[in-house]
Length: 464
Ligand code: G6P
Image (cartoon, rainbow, N blue to C red; front, side):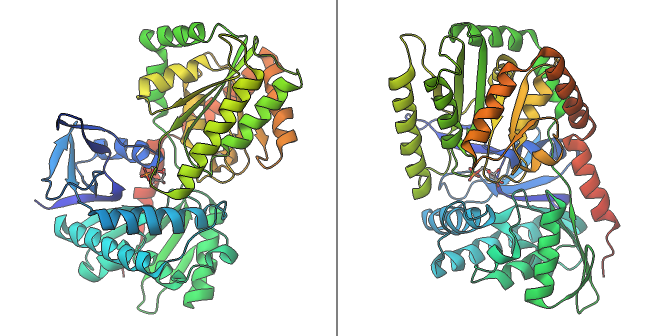
């Protein structure tokens, strides 16, 4: 069946998991991308092409929770070279300010090209005449051009969920020109922030040699490509409703009790990723206890680390580092029944996340670089009592909108300590003033507004 809207993303919104007895089930996929696109899909009657996790081959299209999903299988080699390799050990660190050193391997690149081609072919097969195809994220940057070659009738949008690096860093990539040309297959290329769109246009001018004016690129064949910012958001009303439910309120209370009803709870929730600044943030908190600015009787830091990309070496190293740090901090600073850090290496359903957000007095989000960071926005949406503090890295995209957070430089440990203490000591009046302003921003700019503005802009793009 042909579809008028095709979403192409590396992952499906659900992961296929096989348990010990061979029983198959589906569970929600990790990460911000899926959280953001799911409501968009629900609104329309589109189809979603993506990898269902694992190596199972020949899976049939299926419906999950009312969504039309088309699984694209990956072989073990494809996972190793396209997903773990080029996507997550080359592009991911390169696009995040080289927080870790990107690896460049020609075999990984070759596989990246092949997998992108498979996605493009599948999209070409499923799209109706003149349909709209929306391609997502860094794993699939060649799809727009490949798809345009196969199906010039389509309207193609691309959205990058992660940062787009400054030209000086992007220039390291041996395949920089191919990536830029891949993206130029789209009619509209969307980024989180205006600076990223500007980086892209500048690179296109420098490295591909096309004429550009402001946010437009003029291709030799007369086509125009627009590059613009569309800061992504969350289903604010949905989170708020969840936070208001009696079950979540009950659970939040139970969490506080289980932690021994400390005066204040600090909270971090992140995929276990080296861009998130988990290590530095826990050190900052540990020093505040060591130096007796805080005590374990009064404060606890709950850190949820969602397992992620566990086969990639940098992620394994990070996990060991955090394990060691948490062990050391608790060993040195904890008392019986009173750890300094309550550390959970696990993923949780939305209800539990909402309860954690409601239970926490201070949300700590300190990435070294982050496209947006939806956790920061989810926390704000769940603070229905208009209290609670957000400590937020100025290097997260969300810092552009959440100006009333305690903004910090995650490389500056003393600065982070000062912000943690200040937010801990802040008076209810000040917390209310800040939280109200942030809640207004989030409720007015939710994920529906994000998708609508991207789709409206895409519909207006000239086609030839
Ligand atoms: C980020 C990326 C997504 C990715 C998600 C989870 O949000 O922008 O593209 O899907 O992380 O990572 P994973 O590697 O598990 O798909």
